[in-house]
Amino acid sequence: METTGTFGGRSPQVALLVLLHALAGALCGVSAVWPMSEATPVRLAWLLAGTGLTVAAVLWAIGPRVPAATHVALGLLSACTGVLAWRSGTAVGIVGLGPVVIAVGLYAAHFFSLTAARMHAALVVGLAGAGAVAAEPSGFALPGVIAVLAAGILTEAQGRLSARLRTAASTDPLTGLANRRAWEAEATRSLARASRGGEPLTIAVLDLDGFKQVNDREGHGAGDDLLRRLTAQWSARLRASDLLGRHGGDEFVLCLPATDAVGAVEVLDRLTGGAPATWSVGTATAGDGDTLPALLARADAALYLDKHRRRAARGPGTG
Image (cartoon, rainbow, N blue to C red):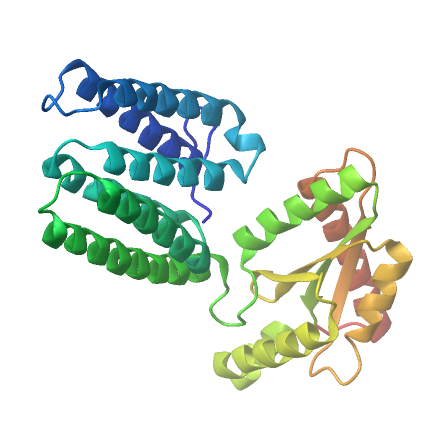
C-alpha cells in the first residue's frame, strides 16, 4: 500500500517492520535476562534476540532497494514465533504470543494485497499453532483459539478496508481512471524501468476541445457523462501496458511504455474513430536523463501548440 511520509528515507512499510523485529528482539533479550520461570529457554531467547535485531538492521539497510525483503522478513518473524511457541516453558508464554500473531496479520493486511495478507496470516497461525501443539505446556486451548480467530477476522477486515482505501486514494471517482497522484507514481516507475532497459517511452497530454461550452450549454451532468463515455472508449482501445489517467478537469495523461514517437502517433490515432468529442494532444518521448516532470512539461508545451493550431484552423470565435 502506498503510504505517504518517510522515516530516515525508509517507507512506513519498511520502518514498521524494522520496528517489529527490533521490538521482538528486544523482548526476547529481556526474557533471556529476566526469565519468567526456570523452564524459560534462555539460550533460545538470546538467539532470537540476536536474530530479531540483526534482521531489523539488515532490513533497514536493504529494505528500500529490495521490495521482496518485507515479505521475507515478515515470514521470518512468523517462523521465529512458531519456534518460540514450541520451546516455551509455560502456557502463559505461549498465550503471550497471541498479540504477535495478530500484529503479523494486521501488518500484512495494511501493506500487502488481501491475498498476500491471507497467506501471511495463515503462515503465522500455522507455524505458531504447530509450535504450540508440539510444546510441553498445556491448558491454553481457549486463549489459542481466540488468538487465531482474532488474527483471521482482523486480517480480513483490515485487508478489505485497506483495499478500499487504496482504490479511493488512487482512482478518479468520476471516470474510474488513475488519479493524478497514482498516475504520476506509476508513470515514474515505468520511466525508471524504460531507462534501465534502454526502451523508449512516450508521454501524451490530452485536452478536450470546447469542454467548457458543453458544461455551459448542457450542464455539468452532461459534461460528466461525456467524460465517462470518452474515457471508457479510450480505455477499450488502449493496450494493457498503457496507463491512462485524469490529470484534472478535462485534461488527461497517457503513459506509453515501449513506444517511440512514431508508435505514439499510431496509438493516439486509434482513439479518434467514433469518439464523442475531439481533443488536442501533445507528446514527449523520453531521452537520456529525462524525468517525468520534464516529459510532462514538453508534452504540455506541445499540447498548447496543437491547441493553437487547431483553433487557428477552425477560425476566430471558436473554442
